[in-house]
Length: 395
Length: 42
Image (tube, rainbow over all chains, first blue to last red; front, top):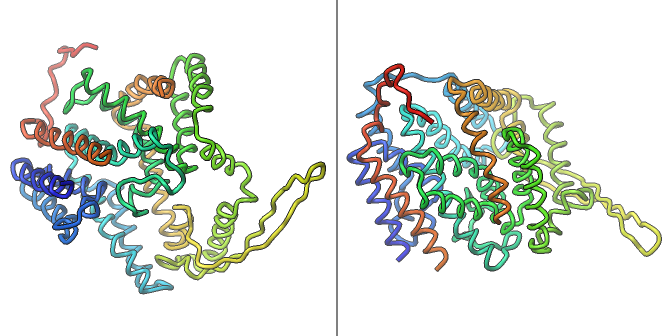
């Protein structure tokens, strides 16, 4: 039943793409985010659906768009350089076999990232892609939100349809994405033209925002709490009635706190006591190792370079033994620990050149966003953001 | 059951969005800018 539905959907979408080829780009985004081939037990799981959608998207662009001129933006050049640099480090990698495995998906992602801006020629296309990304994420967020509301979830225990820690199905990733898209959902509900604002759109948007806020609670990923705080601070920056906003946030917090499951509160408390948390201490040790490694290998070690690390972690834990505090110290050793940070991952694997290209990519994006030709976006954000604490309050 | 509801709702909306895009002329080229003085209002 589920398999038939997913197959019918994808083929239906591709059929519509024959009339408007831009829909192939949306189909690729859909396959990339929802991974229907992993939700299916037959047909889709044996077809290279991602490749098919990419070839169709490229073909559609060649037929419809390329004759209108080709303009490559500076940030696309940065990505082309990054792709070339990653190829160079892969050919000189410390672990050639493992590095080739990661290169196998990195180059595809980068090629599509370089290609995508060429297709986004109109405002409606940008809106359509944003809407598709939100609705695709919603397919995972709605199920996660309902399950959290009914049963509370748990760290690594919330069932998000497939038992796989990849892509958006990984707890911390979906938590960060769920919070990050809240302003986008509210923007679409207010200014969308594909689904123009009416009571149905507003109801769906508010319900989806609820589900988004429930995701970090359900997955108990600490990333989610940090993202909620970051969103709150950005909202404060954009809102005009700050006193009212802070009051609403305070009331929302007081109402929500007693309702949170105790396992959630316990896990969030570990952010504070990181010295007794081997997960946090391991990360600090891996980051220190990475920094040391690039001093001797400034060009990076290629993909998967972390496999050679050997780290010693100092753990100290304070125990209250009735009257006197006992501090117990222990040393753990570990090897081959992953980076747990995109910054250190690219620094260790791609060295300083790759790291600076990557920073440049993000920095130019942020600068372009803040000083773009459409300052109206800032005004729009200021109007949309104040509705966020209301949503929290209703939760 | 919950999974089916979530997949059904999101995929239904995705398909409806694609259907609505079929009839949009501004998908492949932005409309010409409006005449000056022709305010769209608030």
